Image (cartoon, rainbow, N blue to C red; front, side):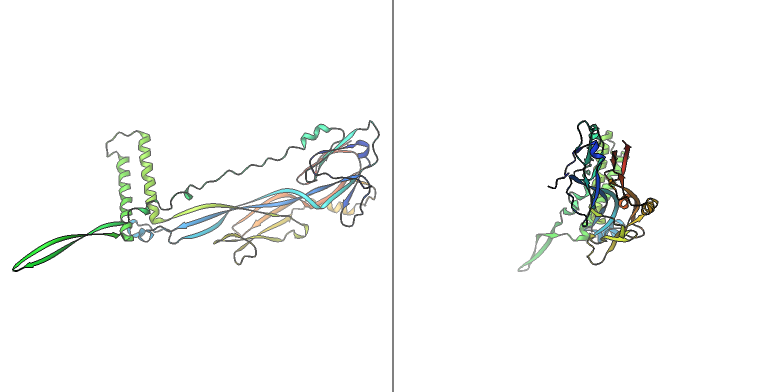
Length: 393
């Protein structure tokens, strides 16, 4: 009966030292014949490129008195219409590993060991990626089982996004209008005049309200000057003086918004992942589109600029790859396969002015080779599947 040990959690697999000397590692693919021997599966990792994009959403709101900003305050640079604009703030490129579906292996185990033979330990990640083997030294388990700690992003609060947009636009917008009505009454040859007062509530015009707001601004500036210059001849302490001055500045700022308008800034975060493949090297691959009026949109959205990613090989594994091509194939048993990752240049580009570039190791465009079928003490990098520590037993 076929017996296979399936590894799905990060646990040590204890093997005998004599068994480790007899293992045979076979590549698993659609053409591979099923094995009837005892053994287990493991995989090598591949590199996933993660692109984090931070977008600034800028909401511009026109002030209710913006049409009178130049006339009453001499302000020219004001918001003239309600708009929403987007711009790319930052692009961050990182990598993380995941099991490579094209790099699964089956490890054939030999005969059962004799009593007294030293035991060995093989470690796999919870996804089945090989981490290392250490014959006869189970104390090294702690070196593999420290999960990476991820920091939760700190919450960001935009103070300007809270509260009323235009705090003082709700001031009294009506006034009482008093009309004097004179009536003349003729009685025979006598003429009598009587006065009546007609009171009505009339809504102020935008120009009247803008003039009042401009007068408030001038009055606030005058009060600040009086306060700071000491004209009031009141001996305020430092804290009281600073508090009153700050309150006047806040009030002045709120009244100015009625003329200049205001902009609210919000941050939007998007994440994309890309798995490099050897046949897409040096090609610009579309990731998403960016529109100034909509922000990040899908690639099938009409218009906008296409943001692309490009992977370029540095070439550090070329010599090794050429050497392995010329080397004679060994038909005998072989040991654990491992990777020599390629150093790559990763470029995410919107245009000439907006692009991000970094260098990182990409496992799947590097070289895959194997150790001899001997007894080793070895540790692998979980991110790349490359050898970290190797000791011949």
